[in-house]
Image 1 (cartoon, one colour):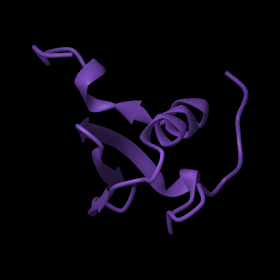
Image 2 (cartoon, rainbow, N blue to C red; image 1 turned 120 degrees about the vertical axis):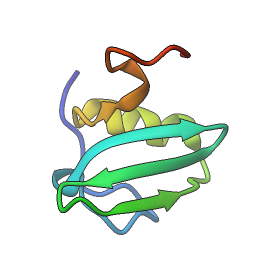
Image 3 (cartoon, rainbow, N blue to C red; image 1 turned 90 degrees about the vertical axis):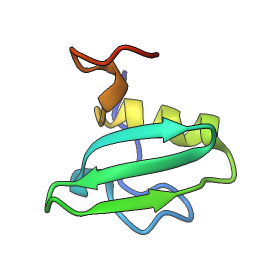
Image 4 (tube, rainbow, N blue to C red; image 1 turned 60 degrees about the horizontal axis):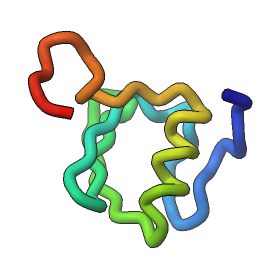
Amino acid sequence: MKKTASYFPGFQYSASELLKYITATKDYTLMLKSGEFVKFTPVDDFLFEQWLLANNIQNIRKEEGWISE
């Protein structure tokens, strides 16, 4: 997938600062490369997820050892 904009509208961190994420319903918990965790609830969760995927941000649920999808 082609890389997209560095910043997502309404989200204060750039894609280059993100390491991994997990989502529950429309709420996202993201791990920054600094080791900090931040929470974000986007207006359009589908577009936010597409932005994360386009910027190769790892979905924690896709890691080996996770049981649920």
